[in-house]
Length: 165
Image 1 (spheres, rainbow, N blue to C red):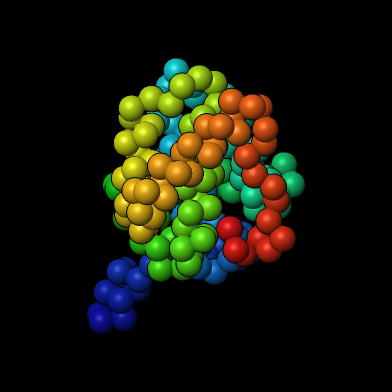
Image 2: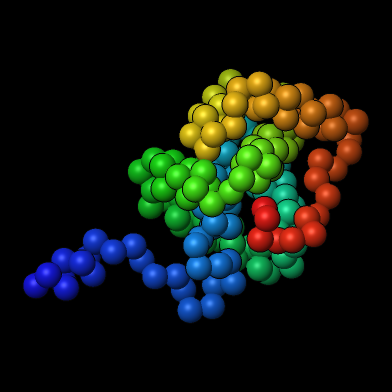
């Protein structure tokens, strides 16, 4: 009986060959990105395309693997009742630089297809607060990405180490 209760409350085991690591860090990061891409429906199509590009470039994935990660992240986001599962994993697993990179990716996604709305800004603010990125750094990141978007520059270069996010 005790074993049954332990099995019931244990976190789900990762898929046999999901390619995203045992700790689910990429999935947690991608789920936050999926959520921010869905915040304002007026820019949804542009943000979804940008989401794919950011995930592909940032995690150094091919199109199929990036699409599969987005699909898994979308399902994880659908099942989530709040952001805690994602943000707590990110906060525990990444250093300050890694957490800032997550917020950079969020800003890149929302800066596509027009001005950033209040709901989008509020979502990034909440996520940054939950993963431990101070307001000053969040604002500096927003300004840097907005300037790059205004110049039409790609905001991110691929990482040398995919595990570093």
